[in-house]
Amino acid sequence: MTIEVSFELNGFGVEIDVEPHLRLLDLLRDVLGETGTKEACGEGECGACTVLVNGRAVNSCLFPVGEVGGTAVTTIEGLTTSNDELSRIHQAFLNRGGTQCGFCAPGMIMSTVALLAENPHPTPSEIRSALSGNLCRCTGYVQIVESIQEATQPSQVTGS
Ligand code: FES
Ligand code: FES
Image 1 (cartoon, rainbow, N blue to C red):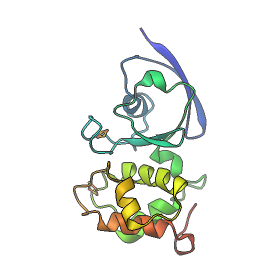
Image 2 (tube, protein in one colour; image 1 turned 90 degrees about the horizontal axis):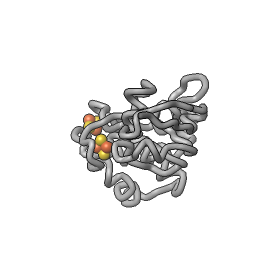
Image 3 (spheres, rainbow, N blue to C red; image 1 turned 60 degrees about the vertical axis):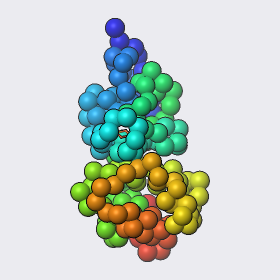
Image 4 (cartoon, protein in one colour; image 1 turned 120 degrees about the vertical axis):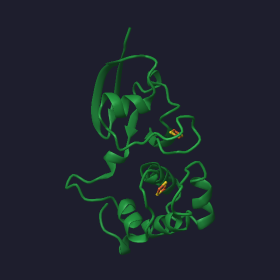
């Protein structure tokens, strides 16, 4: 048995029949081929799978596909511009060494998008609090916090 799901993904309409037991993460990666969103723990603990649903950061590994209908989903692929330029957050992560192996970066960046939409100029403490659900094995977080602070200063970065 399948269910029909209709939603918006990165600004484009999607209508698809899917197995009802799938998670949003499975739909994105395995069905739609949007592999920018990563899976690590699969249990809601690491934030690697973070995407935005109606602007809210969610762990897509815990999000049932049956609840996707009618929503607007944004993934890391949705942040590049129509000219394939990096978003200002991507660029700031590059500038500041906010990514090493890069596995956590899509989730970190999507959580950052949600944070900056609510709080365009967060303090380092507010950044750490907002990203407390995103784990990084490589950077020690200092460069990530610096990256996000840089992303709040549009005059120093390029892209949207
Ligand atoms: S893979 Fe979803 S929170 Fe870790
Ligand atoms: S850069 Fe490797 S897990 Fe964060």
